[in-house]
Amino acid sequence: MSTEITTPIDIMQIMDMIPHRYPILLVDRILELTTGESALSLKNVTMNEPHFMGHFPGHPVMPGVLIIEAMAQTAALVVVDAMGAEAKGKVVYFMTIDNARFRKPVVPGDSLHIYVEKTQTRGPVWKFKGVAKVGDTVCAEAAFSAMITDKESA
Image 1 (cartoon, rainbow, N blue to C red):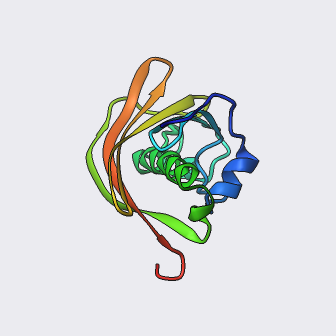
Image 2: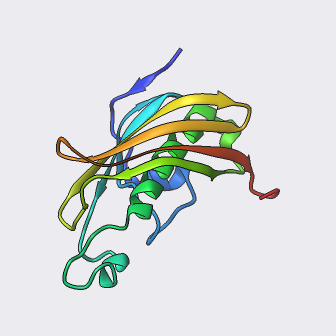
């Protein structure tokens, strides 16, 4: 049975759930979460982020790999939430990225909404599909998998 959480999960709660910190923490808020199934997160893109100094000077564009990383962090939050207390002492690692497509540049001032949905789970391996949008426009999409493991064995 899935539990839908409609109360936002704020940045402080996110930092309690996953180990990422500035400048690589790319999820500002979870807007919706269905336990063990899916989540909708928010990344507010701002000009003061370090990657904009070099990507690209005079024409800032959020790197596609960081959009995919934001999808992965959103998925990690789904995994950690589903595992509850069992997630303590564990970390979620990327395994694969498939069919990544970048449709529209993401620029400072954009509010990037990231939707991830679990497509399969087998043991410690979770598979997801993700879509990143600004407004109603799809900016990026990908399928990816991740494995949850003990921090000590990583």
